[in-house]
Figure 1 (spheres, each protein chain N blue to C red):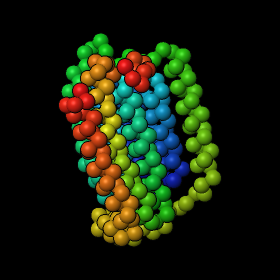
Figure 2 (cartoon, chains in turn cyan, green):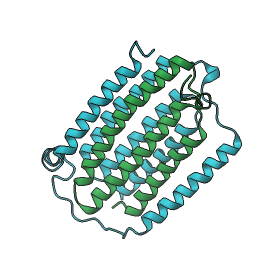
Figure 3 (cartoon, chains in turn yellow, blue):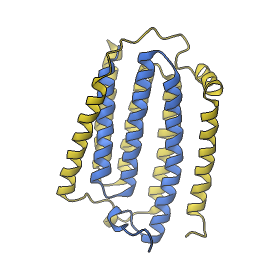
Figure 4 (cartoon, each protein chain N blue to C red):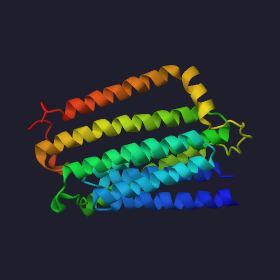
Length: 166
Length: 100
């Protein structure tokens, strides 16, 4: 079944890319692997029928946010000596231990979920039009709050990096 | 058909990789990317349940999560730039004072 094969492909590549993101020394290479991971997750969104969310993921996440990361990395002009070293071995082991605990906890939390088989999806499932109708009717107040949040983020970023605070 | 359990396993693995990255790295930029990984895995859970329940409401929240991540990235990177101006470093171990 091609959907299943594509899902396994995207899943494997996204996990490998996520692993490379957190292990590479150079932040530029990390950012590029993060783009690969985000693209794979967008592919899984497409397989699940969430077409609009997949498009937003590629445009906003992989496009805008990661470009912002790359611009900041280039602007900081990191010298090779200060490009991220790892913590010592004890902290690494502690990190893996805490991560394992989180993983077990997540699996336990998901264990209670009954195996949903998935109903027939309507024809306009995941399309921009139906999502837009939902956004501007039922979820119009959260949408306005998000709009204000983005404005606050823009003003905050300007204040933080403005000339006076330098 | 993609199984729900496989989707949840994938998102748990991605989340845990984000946790590991956040703990073991000293570079504040890569710690920040780990946070993005964790947010991304949360979005994956939302879309998975949207598909399995046949309702579009979780997708609205997935879009909200992405918008939130964009706002967070803008402010976070501004803080990193301001910190770098003062310290010439992105090593988190050198930032242990609230005021200097």
